[in-house]
Image (cartoon, rainbow, N blue to C red):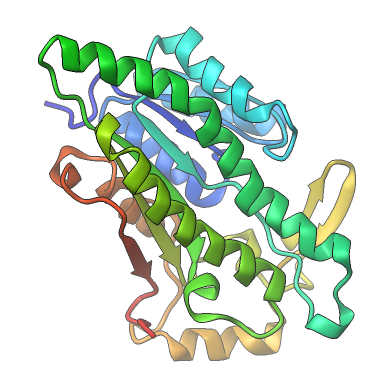
Length: 275
């Protein structure tokens, strides 16, 4: 039997990379997925891929930093599939620079997408989760739900040139620990995955056209300096970057029933880097 049959999963930033791989993985285990991306075509392609495999999915297109996005995201899951079981806060990007060259806007943009957006999504989910938990408790039924926040080893360990990104991703660890305490009474496990070197658009050479990202009509240069890429791989004990599918697999571990008594944890996923 599929491990997630009947579950409803919301995954922000699931049009590409890790999020896309996770959407396909959860759907393959029976979950109904709400896919999110900035681009309608990209989100639609993931929905079609899931449907082609016999799964169910809908798209919730939009920028996670929009003030109304959290409410709209949660409402999409409730209206489309009449449920809310898994929330994965995955959407994000990088906008690097050493501190003396960073603007207030550059710093704030990372807080908006990596901290404020997940906060709003979880806040929007709070009342539905409370109501469902109360009803289930009255019926003598225990249903375990899951939240997974996607952080980074830049947040757990720090990383030169990423004070904005590192600060925001570190905040997600604190958010995870707090929400695991607040939502334990609702039978919600809240955990965090902190990634190291994963092969996505954010870790392509920063002179590669594919590392450019468009956010709200603004083109942003993400990626890593080519000279730094070889040293990144050398620093990983396994000797290579992780794939999006491998990264998605670590989030998946926190979504399945086998982790129903794991909460408030941060899992480092860096191919052996652990400090």
